[in-house]
Length: 112
Length: 112
Image (cartoon, rainbow over all chains, first blue to last red; front, side, top):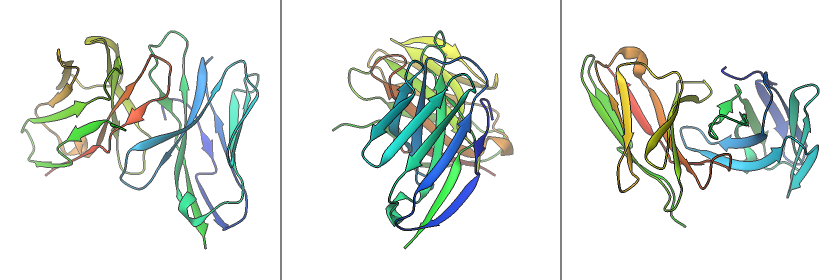
């Protein structure tokens, strides 16, 4: 990966359970974003957290950012079968024109 | 709401042939990005344009070139195709640099 690691690489849970995905990155950032991708489809933006923020919520999503450890986590609460997808974190550096550098992604499977 | 439009959806080419991928960004978005995603891989940044000027370049082979036209649509030209070029190619646009990216559904290129 151009950016860093995500873990786990794959996660299988039951509907109703929570799913936590972690992401580490290598350089200083302007913001970190999480995207979702259904198989063979385009990526969909989920949430953006700026470098001066520590936690952000959006519906069933909760994102944390620890810039001292260069890591972030995405928590999906009360998961649904429709949450089955790959989840990627991506970082934006301050002087890089807004391009996203992606991590390797976590493949989430939510069983009904 | 209008989304990013990519064409064609699928493309099959033979080795050493040329391919042209097209992208129509969301109106009023000032930045266009191209990404390449191999099977099971994270998206890799290729190139971006801000207000029709190339703004950043990533791991794009010399055989590839891209441009953004006066109507803001962008084209990725790929020559001397190799088997390893088989991948999903995504175009994305953003309202401003650093804001979330909106991805198209991609062009699946298969080189035989």
